[in-house]
Every structure is written in structure tokens, then in C-alpha cells.
Image (cartoon, rainbow, N blue to C red; front, side, top):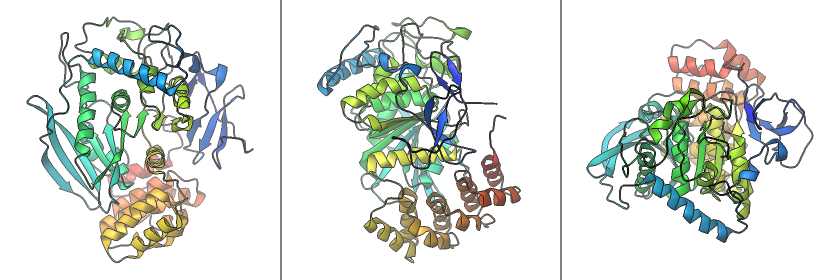
Length: 525
């Protein structure tokens, strides 16, 4: 059975131990998570069968990330002493120069975007827009916007880097929750899915653009493009998210581009670097932290093709490639500080090593690591947690604590006869989750407008009124049924689970898949 590993010197398998005593730093209603030795390692939030674990800050001697923080250890593993923001800013400039030197020849910026909309597709509750932009010389690259209808604008946006390629196709086609861009759009944010260059930009020779650098440059260009969408995207609320290989790219983009307001990385192989390690070891969910296993074997060599001035070499189990690059993992991730940074299903010691940088700014609470039990997937409750993390960090949105004026605005939109106003109300209800909106959302799930009823179903699940939501489990609209199943997947409600179990069959394959996933206690068992 798959279990999350929280690493000390090696992988330590852990099981949850529940306690209910209130403690400082414990989220309301959370359950304690302890390892086999009884040490507190974090807190479980959400349903017991599918919890998110918020990993406790600074576990001291049990995790060894902090002694290797970039504030105390240099790139050559010698001691350094950074105690002020001014000192860190000076070091930050040096780290950026080292990364730029490693990337070698980068396309010029700023450069005209020459953006061209290649294709537009309209769906009941969102629109996709395939856009090509100038990338390097005559070469063009594509990104896909997923724009929710009825969006309160200017809106926050998330740039998304997928795992191994074909991200635009995988993240924007279909309706099931694994189609991350569509699901996030239904929560009320603009998503821009960027195609990275994992295996499609292989050049060689000193001074040529390497795939990692090409991917990072594409991230910069995506920000350039979003900033041209005045009135749609808020220029100060652009976040970047990456999954697996995309997480490697996202960290560089967020670290090197100050226009990025927040960052989340999922299932990356990034680790806190130590003197005895090869670069990029295995991620937390793979175990065997010093062996160079996991996704590093599948993509690392592609990242560094063309970097011949550096010793690529081969080391570790399976001859995984480890580049001797001129920066540490904790150095380039430290560039993100003090902006909000969420690490999902990754090595905790790396985040521990970043906290001293955030503390220089007095912003230690802006960096957080969470874990879940679904291996390299990104389940619905984790996607929604990430959106809430971004909204809180970029917009000050605290779920369930909407100002009275905001609640009145939401209710006015929901009660309006105008579908566009109803959509806007549903989006805002998804952000703020005010309980006072449940009755109106319940009514709108029966709307004749497909966009409104789908947004209302998702918002009703976010508000958490499961008794009302259960009544729509046999709705004629399959996307509404999906929203119902996904909401049951994120709420610990006995009646909801019983209703879901009674309605496992469905003529729509996506609904069947959503219901199947919602019923899973542990997909690896």
C-alpha cells in the first residue's frame, strides 16, 4: 500500500495518529499526524479517507534542511552568513547571474509578441483560446487560455506547466477533474497552459539554448502575453504552477521573473542539496532519496542537452544523469521569496531550507508544503487547496470570511435575472464560500442556462452544503453530476457517500470516472 514518505536522512514511512487538543499553528478542525515514533509531523485537513497533510514547519533535528539554507551555505558548500534583506538581495543578483550563465544564449527580451489567435472554442461555462506568440527568431510557440464565463475581472491567472509534454491537449480537453486547467477555470481563475520543451527542443553545443532554458523563456513570454490582456487579467495576480517536469520549470520562472506573484510546484524531484549528493535526486513520493531514482531518469538529460561546458557525467542507480551546475536547488527556489510558495508532494527539507530566506522578510507563513495520498496525481481537493492558497496570498481572500459588502454583492448577483450576473455571483461564491449563499446556489443548479447551473453546482460544493448538493446527484446535466461527485470527494459527509455509492452507474463515462475516483479510499491498495 502506498504511503507518503517524509524524509529524514532516509525515507521514513509514517502513519496518521489523530489527536484533538488545540495547539499553536494547528488549523481549525485539523487532526494531528504523527510518525511511528510519536513525533508530530503535521496536520490532516479534509475528509479522513482523502486528507491533505499540512507538513509542520521546521522539524528540527528530525529533518536536516535548515543547516543547508542558502543563507548559511554557499554553492560550493562553504559557510556564508546572510542576516539581512539587503545582503540577500545582493546574493540574489549573483544567483540569477549564475543561472543566466548556465542557460547561455537566451532569446532577446523584450521582443514583439506578434500574438495570433489560432483557434477559439466555446463551451457552456468557459472558452478556450489557442494563441501563438513569437518565441525565438522565426520560431513561434503556443499557449492555451481557458477563460471562465461570468468572471469577475480583472481576474487572477495561473500559468500551468504540465508533466512530460502535450500539456495543452491533456489539460484543456474534456471535463473530468484531471483536466486541471478546466477545473481551475471553473473555480474562477484564468488559466494559461504553456507547452514546455521537454523533448521537442533538443539542441546541442556550447552556447545554444537548452530545453530547460527554452521552457523558462516560454514562461517569461506567457507572462508578457497575459500582461497584454488588460481588463481580463490582473497584472499583479499572475501565479505559476508546474507538475513534475513542469515543476522544475515553474520554480525557475517564478524565481527569475518578479512579475510572478505566487508559485506552486507539484511532484518535482527537487531536493535540498548537500555535499554528498548528485544534482536532482528522487522526490519524496519515490523514496530512496540518495539513489537518483524516479522522474530524474526520464527527463533530466533532456533538460540539460546543449550544456556541454558543464560536466554532465552519470551517477546514481540506473546511471541517472547529474549535472554539476553552478547553483543549488535551494538557491534558485529561494529566489521566489517573499512571494507565496506552495510545495505539493515534494521533499520537505527543501522547503525547510527556504524558510530562513522568508524569515528575513518576516514572511515565514508564505511558504508551505502539503502532501496527499494520490502519488503523482493532483486530486480535486488539492487543486482547490492550491487555488485557495493563491487567492489568499494574492487577493487576501479568506474562505468563509467574506466582508458583509461582498456577501451582499454575491447574493445580488445570484438573485439577478441576468445569467452573466449569476455567473459572476457563482464565481465569487466559489472564492469566498459564504454559507449565506447556499440556498440561492441550490436554486441556480436548476437554471436553464448550462453555464450558470454548472458554476452553481461547483460553488455549492465549495460552500459545503452537502445536503442540498446531494439532491442533484441525478441531474440531467453530466457536468453537474461531475461537480456533485467531486464535491463529495472533498467533504466528509456520510449521507453524501451513501448517495454516491447508490449511483455508481452513469451513461456518461466522465461521470463514472469522477464517481469512481470519489469512492476510492486508497487508489494504490
